[in-house]
Length: 294
Image (tube, rainbow, N blue to C red; front, top):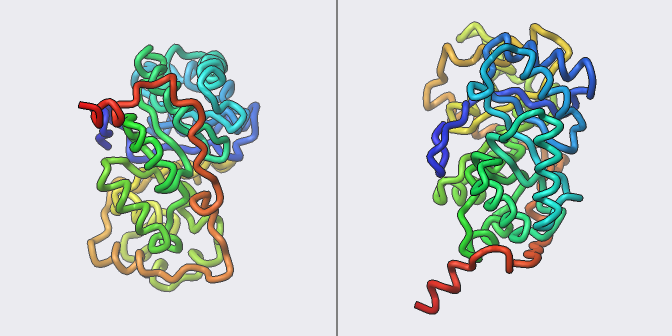
């Protein structure tokens, strides 16, 4: 996947959300790397960066061949705090650079101030690419309106049941060359919906795949990167990666897009909840205002 800063990111990775810190996280990342995954997604909030870093180091795979994503938690917002927290992430991961650093959520506030720290970290070569997670249009526009470079990625919950609900956000990101990484690809945990759906089961039979594999392939064919979360089952880790040898046809993608959402479930959606707190913008050059003066 080509990013708007010129870097490349794998379309499929393994997420380590809920991978228990310690041996489970370490072993699961090892399994993933052995199977062929080259993107590992973690976060300070997951408390397993040490285990992810140890598994990468022990894999024997050159560091530059593995794309590492991690995220700053809400307690690390603010310019100086973000700089210090990133150094701590690097130490826990045991690496001297991060491939993609995300602001985990807009709920920590100080959006532009924290973003300015990420821009500086990229200039300092501590981070190759910078992005966000769980940001809505108002949060993304705050970065844009203050003349900063836009994120390369917005990592959000994305699956067929909330595909239509997030239409405006999807379009805004596409128009502004922000790639979407989808988490919660299996209906955000609504397992009964995908296990029993007749259309998904038909497609699974047609392609000789499982229903979860159909959903992950739908995301890729919709131009989203995917990070199915770690599993204690080696077979599931392997299954989630085995989606690159087939492709849904465009009509099948459209039909899946039209699946009705659950009217009584509120998908995790910070767009409506997190205020747009800019913070101190003096750490970055306000290009927009400079341009207005010219």
